[in-house]
Length: 217
Ligand code: DC
Image 1 (cartoon, rainbow, N blue to C red):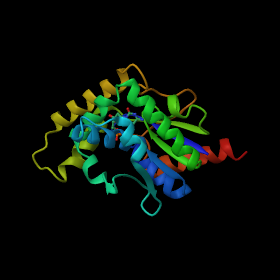
Image 2 (spheres, rainbow, N blue to C red; image 1 turned 90 degrees about the vertical axis):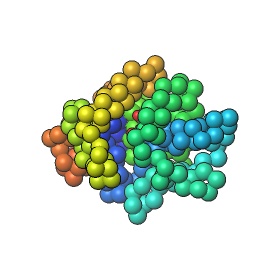
Image 3 (cartoon, protein in one colour; image 1 turned 180 degrees about the vertical axis):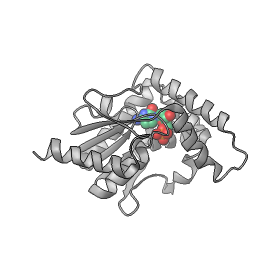
């Protein structure tokens, strides 16, 4: 069973996907993490082919924490991937249709090995898994998403400015929504969840009730 959760940055899709995967004991594919890992690798090894990274990276899901983890050369890359700089690099390389095509094959190969999967990203339901059992689109207004990200970043950086965070989120939204391939959009027949109205728990419960309604009967 494949469930997809797409949506813009800061919408809460990652947290919802993680909780859902823990509850359902289904593999969580955080596709953005692969874009981030690839961007990080390309930034540090500009001369190396993308194919080498994709063929040799190891993607795992830790059932105890619900976390997706990326390894390269036996090194866990996760600690380097959650910065705003890597997010911006990832958003830039994500506009390259060749990169997207390579990652699409990687995502589908992972789903063959882990057929019970919660996949979150920008194009999981629209392009990568259009035949998913349930497609969701997780959204919230840009100011709400920027405020959430700002509160998060404040924990480690007291000098962070809300206006800068808002600008970065808007810039990433524009790039993610307007690229020539795999652009962020609400997939056909997706369940739309606005996270200003739903807490993480209630969104997870709602999605689980829809899975039971749509898939088990
Ligand atoms: O979900 P995230 O913030 O970790 O994603 C980082 C970037 O990766 C995002 O700005 C766009 C890109 N991305 C993508 O283009 N397609 C996906 N399915 C997932 C992420």
